Amino acid sequence: MISNLRRAVRLPQPRTRGVDLSHPARSPLGSAVVNCVVYEDGVRQRGDHPADVAIRRVRESGSGFVWIGLHEPSETEFAGIVELFGLHPLAVEDAVHARQRPKLEQYDGSLFTVFKTVRYVEHDQLTDTSEVVDTGEIMVFTGADFVITVRHGGHGSLGPLREQLESAPEQLAIGPSAVLHAIADLVVDDYLDAVAAVQDDIDDVESEVFAARGGLGAGRIYQLKRELLELKHAVAPLDRPLQALATQSMPLVDLRITTYFRDVADHLDRVIEQITSFDELLNSILQAHLAQVTVAQNEDMRRISAWVAILAVPTMVCGIYGMNFTYMPEEHWTFGYPLVVGMTLLICWGIHRGFKRNGWL
Image 1: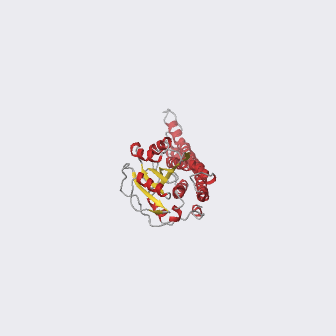
Image 2 (image 1 turned 60 degrees about the horizontal axis):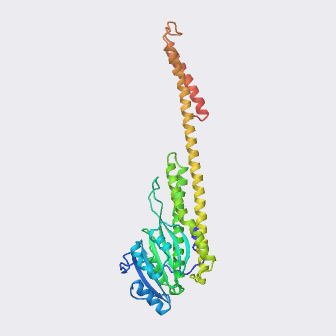
């Protein structure tokens, strides 16, 4: 099903060699600024300019836009850009401190969007403490002539995405909303990859549940459920913002992009459905595991009970002959001891055979 998701129509995004264009050059506005690039008619302009010079150039020419990328900026590092572009204080607070739910908010002159990024954490074997998914955040400020991306976390670099967009200038020529769509599409594509990898883990857990006894502990299933819950919290809240971008007319979103947001929203809906089905499947796997544990415990109890019943016979005989009465049957007979022992063994063998026939041993 996941492979079919990628066949849907979307804005053309050529897949070229992934080169991270996030260079070490820093803007005077702060060390958190990774890059500041001017685009005119979808073409990247030469030179790296401070944000104030870049936006002045765009507004004087009356065309193009500025794309500024930041990584985990502090309030001080972000202050210059906030003043320059007139960003709303509430959105700025969310962008700096992170740990936000996916959302879409409209302010005067800008659109603020929060995306949760997801990366599958490779591991040789799932354990009770394995980290399966790692999350980060990308905040996007979209204006009429600017895009400001703020990234939190150690993954989700936008360098390769920038390269792909620059290889398709007709797409960048649409404006900042084309960048917003490309980021949304990238984030959801990462969801698809993570979901596919999590499905492999679930398949392995399901196989181990029905393998040899003791091959899987409930802690591993619970750990996978916790990681799946984290994935759900990152993915599900994005549905409403994407639906708004796909169905509502917004001043800062080009109408030509709206159709493509519908495609991304459809992909997200399918991811959410799959995550929900995973959760239900894990519940079933956990119930099956607990049922197997209960059955195994019952089998152990039956075996223990059977052996207790068998050992009760010699225990009873030894108890009788250990009471030291003066007159005991066959006590002074030569064959008394072998007879008692033989009869005891014979009775034990008969009881053992009966339990064996009934499946208790």
